[in-house]
Length: 475
Image 1 (cartoon, rainbow, N blue to C red):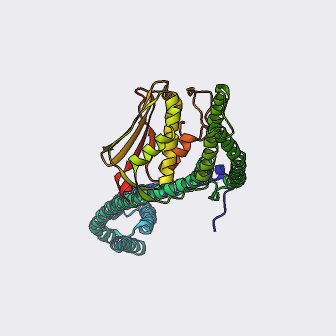
Image 2: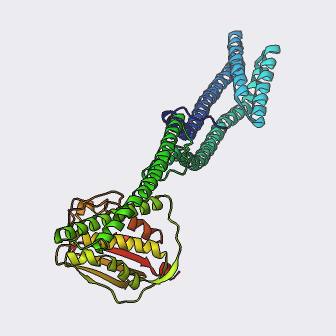
């Protein structure tokens, strides 16, 4: 099992070393090949120069020896014989050095034959010094010079062989460098991919965890695999997730509790208001009737807020759909009828669709969405305005538009309009302030069916658009 790096810096350094290692290996191998070629070429030059110099020296000494043999043949002077002896020792020494540097058997045989003949000549002169023996030695120098020329040719051939060997070594080194470069490239690329993955994986896990927390997803545990500092950061995020999850559960429980606690006294208030409004306890004066209407309006609004809180709490815990077939036009008319009284007070006119739209969906969820959208249109519409609800087919979508003549949504708030508890800067008509969760509930109810609730272009007021895929509408 690989040890975990202590920090991201250590991981980066290790990745850098790992990626550069193949390149450093290739550079080292290239350097070794170059040093080997340089050494081989230096040896070739040195050996070639040495062989050529020795061959030339042998040739010159042999000329001197032949001249001394001729002089001794004529003069028979012992001093000339002594000089011949010195030349013989010199040439023997140089032939020995040539023999040591010669590589081929044929060249060595030539050297040995030349040395043998020179030794025989010297032995002849040494044992029987005289003109006759000197003449025989002079005659033998013809063959000796031929062998010397052959020796020069052998030295030249040796240089050619060294050059050929050096050329082969260069070609071999080039092939090795090409093979190493061909291998090092993919290996380096593979190591780059691996190290990039090792670096990006914990960062990606942190990014995913932070996005999940920001999006309100507290169920998925957070675990970060990577350097210890990033793993520790993942542990702190896991602690934060657990804490947020606890707070979310407490909030959900609180909303459920407070909503149900408010509904009980509200039911008594609504019942008392209805009794007063129905004149069960007796006739009312105009002032009393006005107070009853105010109580009825505010109690209905409070009931709407409580229902929104319950719907929001239910959506946060997970939307469960109970699909059933129904007619969208009938559902729209049902929702609009609920707001007839509020619309009459503001002298609003509704333009309802007459197109048929048979839908299979959770009727209660769709009604909740329409209820919040129509409520929003009524609250923001001016006196004597109109609210138009249209149904049409666009490409592979069924579209429902709810338009009003209100002030619309400012450009800077269009991306936030469906966020929970967001209240825009545009004031709504009336003295009651909204809760900011109606549009969020509508958005979640529509999205749970695989459809979309969007905000259309602001032409003359606001336009909320439901885009329902045909496949979803028929399923």
